[in-house]
Image (cartoon, rainbow over all chains, first blue to last red):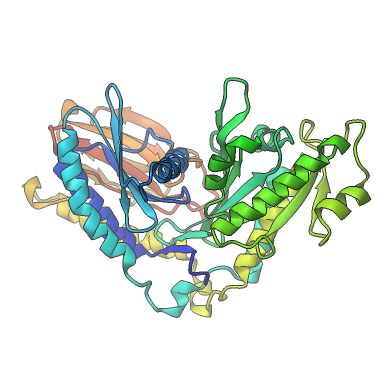
Length: 162
Length: 321
């Protein structure tokens, strides 16, 4: 498997979810998302049902990427924390390890300080969970057999018929 | 690269449409967005200037549904074609799984095509990707215009290696789906080179396993839910009871009246149809899954609105087959 592929296992997600719940409760945030730098959503907790999390993840990753370029232009390797302030809702973004971004959405029930505090604390846990080597059980590593591509193709034919 | 989320049983691939300015990359996405069924697509997001030129990227998520137990998603991106947007163009390439190079077939645009292709190679190098090793499909767009170059000429200049190519008129949709189908196949073929699924996993679909496991967990949660002191129980549906006996509907009930808690419904996929609410009263919610054909995981959340303390409960259920 390509080392750049992102593979997250269920047990990792469970641990991450627990950490996110702890963060949400502690900081009284609305929701928290863990997003891959490539723009994929890894997991989410809290009240996300009204959010288009797929698009949100892609945009958050995009905004982080562009900030990184800004950082480079002013001579910083990377800005590790980003904060968007809105009228009601705010977003706090921070980098976890090499390739994931933690986004916390919160409102005026709490403060940026609380969010930062908890996010920082949880960051270390998350980095540790994410750096765990994937479990070695063979069956979990495999994924796509030859039927898979054929099934996708027939599905695409269905969808793309004019 | 290809992202596999075992917890959500999800495979995501990122496909980027590259090419010179005004070659029709955004038009490709707009056509796909217009033509495919609503349950398959998300919103088309364009970060564009006032004059409708792409500033950062366009983004269109496609969810083609459950394949062998994995929810399979493609994320389509375009890059800004204009030369001076290279900084943002490069960013979009991060984690790309497959490329569609949209070239403008008009003779006077050939130089821009070549320049863009060279720029693509340079930008990929910065991420240590190699154009020769990535799935690439060429699309020669605007075939309906006068002054277009012949296929042979374009091929010899842009695609001497003879990679897959399609002629297209993106505004009418000619060749758009063919291109997309080809690149998705190449991306998945490449992923297929990886280890095959072992026999043990083939026997039972991972999604079913997961759903069963979640259901078991949920049953235990409901037992926990009977505990009166909620401070002892975290992440449980303390105020709800779920009727598992009913095969095709789901019933939620809350002991305490109104104000203090709310129900919200969320399907496992944003693109999936939400379950139909058959009955909704203050303390009772009856749901019927929208589709009986496939396995659908539905979560219903109950929240206590007491300040600063929220509870979530997940209900996962297999419907249909």
